[in-house]
Image (tube, rainbow, N blue to C red; front, top):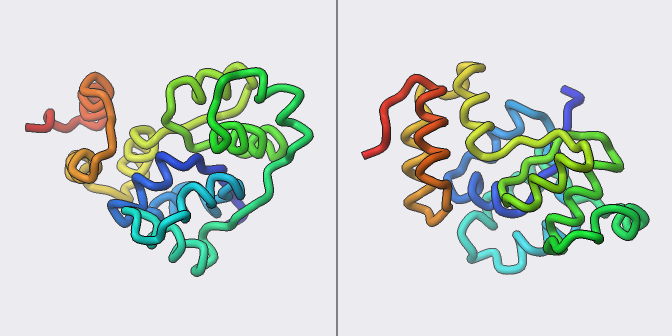
Length: 168
């Protein structure tokens, strides 16, 4: 497999919390984590999801990559994004790989900069379409219980697209 995806912190942590980082690899290939995002995710290994992220790096399904600083100044830093989102978008621009990002402003800016994006909900739908998951509702529930926020409207839309019933 010669495919790659750039990951921002929030969805990476979310998939780590529910032990589904291998699902990202199975769907999209090697997960490239900008160094700033890795520092954010791994600053405390006791933090929920951090151990799973470190394990993915150790197994070689995720790699830490330096972010291209020359792109920061030209395009991405003009916006009010966090350092992690800025690094992730910059790396996606430099590599032309898709970006896994959930943060609304980051998604909007990435789209404006013509970066191909996918979010947590999109990953779950893709996994079901590719028959890697039978149902996505259990993972949505698990993500919510782990403290990850997905809007009610998004959950409803994703479950409808997946042909599943609404969460109780």
